[in-house]
Image (cartoon, rainbow, N blue to C red; front, side):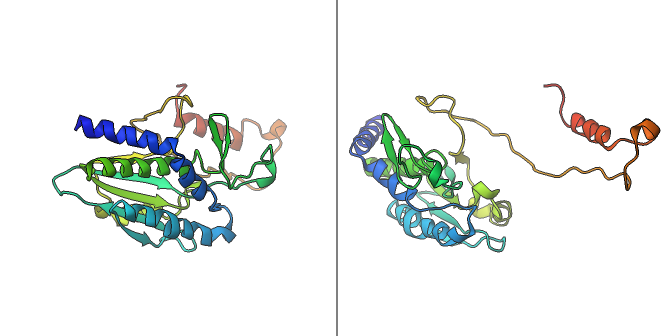
Length: 249
């Protein structure tokens, strides 16, 4: 096992040094998957059908495209490679959409839709969120398969195309397809690095829940000089409500 591991690592390093990772990433960054722009709907789907779908098929995955339960929201790709039911299953999550390119704001003549090398850094929309991460994950699986002929575990991939607009339909999809998505480990490579020169591994993640909090006590204005202390103050009510959600830490 250690020899095949070392061989896979050496092959991956050689593959990287030959520019193969950069070529894959550059091709993927070139697809304008701005999920905030309705006119990019075809590009969001094309990223799955023309880019990621064929890539996972070459790795021995069976792929399928899931329609989004939210009307007008982009589809998702699910792919699975089963080696042995007795082996553990790893579920890999990623997203192929990116935030708006803001083309005119890039310095030095750069384009957000091309990967530009500057020293030891690569610049391009999606290189760090999230095309770079899932490109690396898929490349790693490919190098292990090339060295061993098998992964040694079952693998599933869920790639969505709406993360940058709040992942519409993701929760409903996961709830409806919970059995299909069942796994022993979830690897979600979408998050910050504490240092650019050192990989970061988080063994958990805080979530977020967005909501509106409104206080509508009465119609019209009531001057505090006459009514202060007698009527409830919406600002005080809101402040107290917000303060009750967390403590000083």
